[in-house]
Length: 330
Image (cartoon, rainbow, N blue to C red; front, side, top):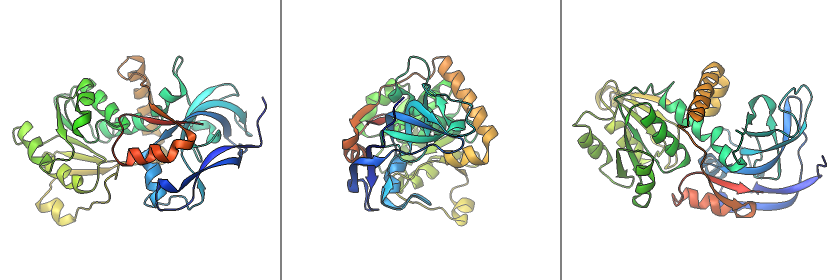
């Protein structure tokens, strides 16, 4: 099939934020190297990590100007050396470099097949949001039936998946979201939904758990909410899995762990998990496939924007004005 020499793409030009992302009409189409495939992007996922990179707060993030985006789904159109699969014509989703574009290179070994009958937009959560939620719940959070799970940002793509899976595993779910999103979260099966902007989150969680606290907290909000998450976790056995810093950095000292918050604090970065614990990730993806096959997780339709509106999509995500997954269509 014919592959053009140039394409539309979004480039981040500063570390001042996504408002400095610009559309380029003649960006060079990348060439797949050894072990890589080139895909024609049908949809690119918008994530908080894109915002962190644009502000320069993502650890070892790219320096501007750089091709923006990292999550995409589309059709394989070319393969580099030593690639036995996927093959041209296959539909895949994956994580790479420069996803906010018409073409993108992906590591062949990490390209995930798009399930039959799913659109490219629906497949985006397969490689970032759903694995993150499952990792936080199972191998790291060790959720068990009968436990109480507190899920922050429950109306977002990762939060929605976490609520759905936690209920499937038999947990009582306390979710947080802004008031306008409460009905969405309740429809997913959450037992209680709290106002994410409340200054009394920990007290409300303790009230709902008869003073015991949550067995597991999925913490992605960051900022002042991190303190509330620690205070809301059950003493001694409570686990707080931290996988996001949307509200900014927050800290905890060894003194606080001994005298104030006697809880387990667990860090999660899905990219590091893939690299450092590939067996765990493989088992996790097997579990995810089983959940999809059983109908526990069903495809959803993201809110889609044109590629040129990428800065707008990122600004709305940063302002917590969105629900569910967001996608760009190149």
